[in-house]
Image 1 (cartoon, rainbow, N blue to C red):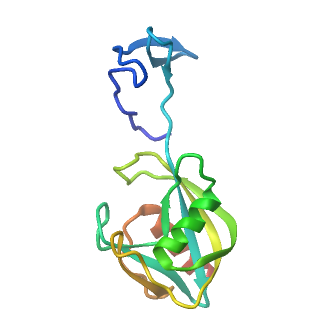
Image 2 (tube, rainbow, N blue to C red):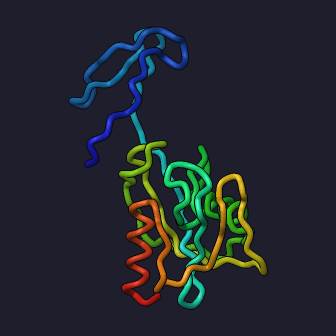
Length: 172
């Protein structure tokens, strides 16, 4: 279990009353005595696409922090109500210009190095995509490229590095 703390909310988001502490399931929980709302801390999740073509993988170079100017697999946070496959579909179009053909679950990790959402789950999929030309959304990414598995670029995220090394060991 990661040693992270959830946001320290002081007031109820529904009625504005100062939150109190109650014990529930042997855990301290923030609680509103006014409207009876209980805060259950939870983590976010991201969906990450591993797209392989021969001995190359498709990666994007980040244009903003965290890990600005490093490479990563196309990915994004899962929007509220969205299924991870829907996220992959959306992110593929935004970050690569490609369309999802097939996605197969690969692995899931708990992120330790993303200050935007500590402890979020990073869900990786092996993806087949369609499209004739790759292009990236320049607000998020500086570049997009098919990267040779034997010539790794500077990768920022811990689990993206791990996946890249795993693909190298498997010889894709």
